Length: 498
Ligand code: ZN
Image (cartoon, rainbow, N blue to C red; front, side, top):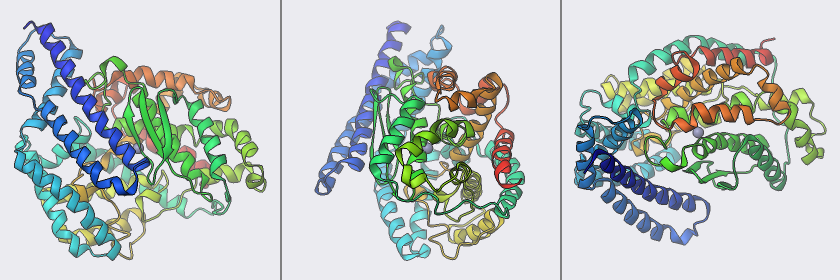
């Protein structure tokens, strides 16, 4: 076969594998949004059958043959080489793990979740420790099957953020930590406090109307996506079928609004990927850090800005006249930008959130090097929480047992959240340099310039570049925490440290 024909065969096959993956995602979405309670077992069977078919397609020997031919071929374009390289990574992951290992890991992942849920309810870390130790052992074995022996934590990081390493993250987080810890202390000591009870009794119907207007105005295409209700908000799907979810709390209207804007950022990214390349490296996202940069940029830099609220405050007051009548513009803005250190990551504001991530990264890294034993995690967690957040968890439920991630073997995932915040701030200042009156656009309800700029520079680039290279190309600078620190100081300093 000629190189061109082989390349065409390869991409056709990759897109087929990807299509099967999206069907699995759709089943997962349906499970969280629609599934009748009695159907759980039947659904598990459907998922398993589909996963088997998808794995069969992803590990088809013909794929291996095409890849070998293309890797040795001259004359591939840079884009084509990116597609081949990414396909090789996927193919190796699908073929190099022994079937017995895959079965053992799948069983352990689901066992891990239940063990974690039970341990958290009972505040019993000791009962959970052997499960966690087993998870750690399994991911290390996975790394060595794939040729990463001795660099197991880097393997886990690369799995979520291609090209990223523990060394790079350690340097970035160290720099961030030095200035962020004192900033959080200063804000926590501020006399300015948001009114905790400012926003009460917001009907679900009204919230639905308002958030639909907001997300549509930001640019989410409801002809190619939808939003529904689930217990935990998420965004799945890609291209022309993007599914977001949210949840409604009458006394916390900002929770559903901001989580929806966050998911909208993810959704805009997925809707902006090149439609004809879906599934290849030219039509998939660049990794979790870049994905998170998109959700955070819209959620924080955009939707917590003065300009944004100059545009939307009148509309919020029109939809909820009684609920907002006793709340001043300044009180509303302060509620939107409330900062208060907490022990729980998912409740954290955008300033302290980063410290929660640094804590997890530092512990994970030591778990992988062996500097820290699983049994010593609770104590190490308490020490780190006191040092970073200025708070000591009274129990493990509010400490090491709070997150689900490690129970399913998802190590190396946490750093993406903070890297995403760094990249978001860096993109924000680049956008502002190109268009200084960006917030005036927002005040008019106009987000088209910003979305257009992200489409061109991030969304349509797919996975051509990793997060570090993308930062370099789009902002002209190396990825660093400087923009994030500047942004946090400018926005929150103006509110709390005046
Ligand atoms: Zn997110």
